[in-house]
Image (tube, rainbow, N blue to C red; front, side, top):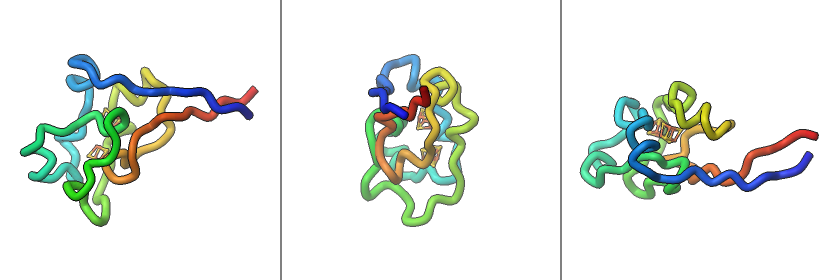
Length: 86
Ligand code: SF4
Ligand code: SF4
């Protein structure tokens, strides 16, 4: 198995696709900072809930386009690496 770098860009297109603001774990604090695309930008720090209630990343077109295999990026940080089997 090898690891391949897989950064997700934060662009107008990825912001449009991001469904974080429809997620129960998206807090007022995040809304105030107009945060999103956490798979690109990393965790939301103190704005993130202590316990994540749900994650909608699996419903996001960015998840499919960039072949992400994680979730809860607002809590755990950005998606940077994709595991590739060969
Ligand atoms: S990263 Fe997941 S848990 Fe966090 S706000 Fe976005 S959809 Fe919700
Ligand atoms: S995969 Fe999750 S954090 Fe990344 S853009 Fe989609 S909803 Fe937002």
